[in-house]
Image (cartoon, rainbow over all chains, first blue to last red; front, side, top):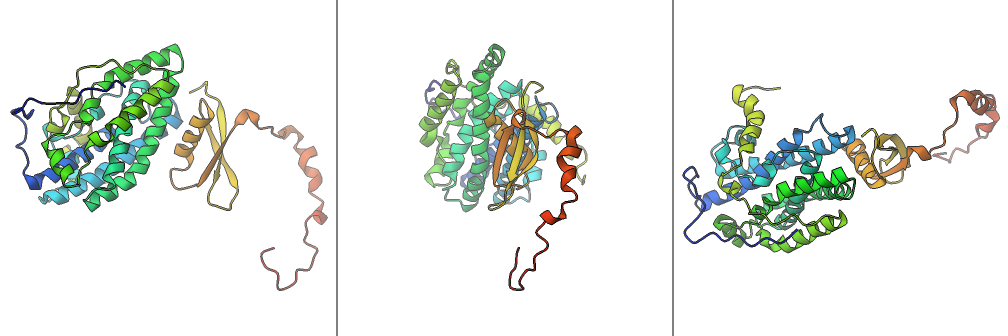
Length: 275
Length: 93
């Protein structure tokens, strides 16, 4: 993948819109960061769950459901911890099912629609390759809980990256049609990659304390890994596009609202429902 | 996918035991067959090692020839080593 320029916002511009929540103080920074980690996993897990019963084969159906369950497990751990840190009595379920779209802090990549199988695998590869490197770094976090979750999840995500890479290679290097679909899928997703490497004040603040991982540390490694897989797939790096940012501040694409409607409907309609 | 070949899956449940046939998966090639086997048959900690073999490579006995293949062994009890006296001190035989 072509390396994209670093993101520099003009001084004084925080990217905050009128509907942004106020910038968190020191105490809120960890909570916000945990929402980012948890929401990435939650939203992608929900997206992958949409494939259940619709995948190209029963084996692929299971692979995608396994990915989804891994991710929802990670989300549960991160969001439960976020609720603990916040200290207002909210747990992971409350944060997942009773928050509105503007309060979600996931990156835009994970909320993109599944499209066809190639588009789903393009998204999965670009995200898992990033998440794996992130978790490898977070396994050494100064926050013991984050370190423990990341160390456990890194193994799951390593498998996600490997399997997704296998499919990028097979579809890219497959038939004319599979190749065209993989190129389209990568073109769709590539503009959301720069956001993964955006380091805002909050991230830098926590990275200085050794709690968060600054993704700049593994950007070159990520780009090299993506380039290797694309080369093996016989694909050109996707053409450079204008990066689209904003998920970490609650500026989401239209797709997230629809996803949350499906995900949150039941617990919001029947708040005390048990099964 | 209907045009993917079939692979037989063998799982070793723990070190020291043999691989055991557990079922089959469809996959386009051996690497994906291993992934599919992992996702289908080891998601509840069933194994520590996996083999996949193209189903087409297995030569099977003909059920129509069962009688000739297997019946002659039925009355050869002397082939079982059960007529020896085992010394008391010997265990696990």
